[in-house]
Length: 136
Image (cartoon, rainbow, N blue to C red; front, side):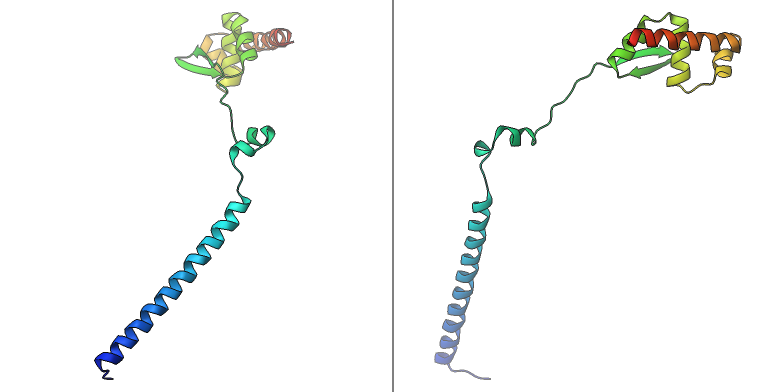
């Protein structure tokens, strides 16, 4: 299809006009969408205090006490439990740490500490009684 120079200029102007209309329409749509968003937005300074509290979190820096047992450091995060464990005699503390924090059986503890299993059982039961008393 051969067009004259005048016809090409007309087609070009019509196409440019069409592109401008499309871009104007898109710009208006964008501005309408932004108006809708701005209507729903609230500045932080306008929010109530109880709503603002829901947007933040506070780090709790708890002091972790580590107990040395069998060449390992056993972390105890609960402050009351760590204090109660610290107040136990060393042998009883080791038995409790091995039993409840290292998941060792009474037989394994007895072998490790060169004790009789019944002695380990006695110290474990006595340690639990002491811990209960200290934590009350």
